[in-house]
Image (cartoon, one colour):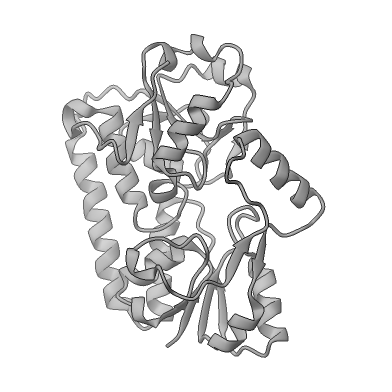
Length: 304
């Protein structure tokens, strides 16, 4: 079987099932596991965010989407040449990757006899279900079952270490800095599993822009900066140059020094196996006395 993955999360799932060799094409954002680097790349971004601020990237994205333009290019010639049996894509988020509709149309026009499957999880449970689904599509049902069992075991281990009398801090995961967005979808479950309380309660719902007064009213005790697609170094740099809204420095989390930059790309943005790593990481941020302080390579405190 030849597989093309047009999602970084799908790439991670395919590799977790032991199918790295079957993976014949990936996206420009697929960087994990390291073995996928060097695979043929079928996509490119139409927006070059290098050097742009959060506000500038938001403006560029909104302008393209407002004009009904795709954010990505798809190398149709390479897709035809690869002749995959299975193409994994998504329809959940136009900002995240090439859409299912675009891929399906390209495959049909190019006479590529591939099965095109859209993965669209909105919760942590659905992410685990997607691993099972990819296992079924590739004849790796038993491997997928073992992977899911292992991930569930790790989630249960985090829960078992949380004391029954635990006080859960109010947590805001900021998915974009300027303008501020609150994370949704599977991140809500990550917060709860890590021993926190999400201030905006967006279980299974998309991320959404939030007004400064809403953030002030929510009074988060811990703020986790996790802009979509950013690694920890980039998050820290972006936080340093962002002019946050008036009242930011009066927030309880900011005054207490409880603002963290995290590796969002690896552990929170991609609906794949490493979301469980994200739960473990967040447990360390929220309850270091129980789980230990996270590695600076994955999370670091942002001083006011």
